[in-house]
Image (spheres, rainbow, N blue to C red):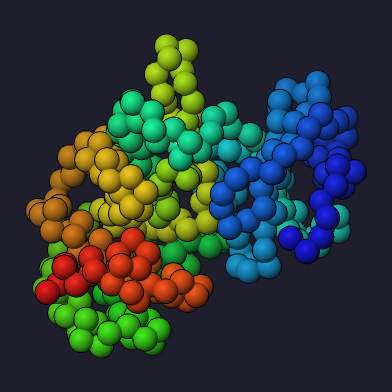
Amino acid sequence: MTFELDAGTVLQLIQQLEPGLTISGLSRLEGGSTEVYKIDLANSDYGALVLKIYPDEPEWGPSKEALVAGWLKGLTLPVPTWLRVDESRSLLPLRYSLLTHLPGRSLRHWMAEPDIKNVYRQMGELLRRIHAVPMPGYGYVRGHGIDKPVHTNAEYMTAAFDDVFRRFRDLGGDPELARRMQQFAKGSFDLLDASDAAVLAHDDLHQGNVLALRGKAGGLELSGLVDFGNARAADRLFDLAKALFCSAHKDPRSYQPILEGYGSVDHPDSERALRLYTLFRRVSMWGWLTKIGVDAAAEDGPGGLIRDLREMVI
């Protein structure tokens, strides 16, 4: 941030929510691309709040997260409640949200625990519950809802694949690899019609976006789901492929338990569909890393993306 966040300013923020609130502690929370703080409160039923400060872009970031969290609340999922979204910049030079604080720590902290696979299964179960939220069309979610929704998965994903391959080429990707990837993808486009309906997709479920703690019985269990900035309306397997790809990148042991926790899928060829969507996810990740200046072109670059892509299609 380009400004100093002090306790006096934070006190003004929370007292706009409730005049009698007082602060007993302030600490920065780890991870994410935005500034997030835990505000400990004295003598309050809230216990603690979370202050999330958003950059200027995307302009719909705060309203989108509040919207998606509201959709998930009806399922009694462990998600924060957005208490206030302030885009006035009257107290801070950036937009911010105040939300309830969830117990637990990022699952990244628990990956060395012997019972970690049980929590990975819970991640799969959690994703299945997210997908219980039906959506009226396919498309990216912004602050007002689905942006330019389309009626079929085939229409949505065909355009998405065209876009991701075009960006691969524009960012300097190997033209021959791009041709082979496009050929591989088109060979499985028949599977896009198998999507029965659009569902709410978290689109970023991995160890950094779930919280866990030791339960009363001593077992490790999920305690929260955070970060809804990537959410979209999509085919459920498209989202499952992202969760498997991102989680297995951080810990290869997570793949099978997440898949087991998610359960069976009514699909003519779910394994082939997951492979198709994983291709998309790898190319998309390569493009993002390249755009932010990471050398993702190297064969052994971040996560071995180029190596994995070549192995998929050659």
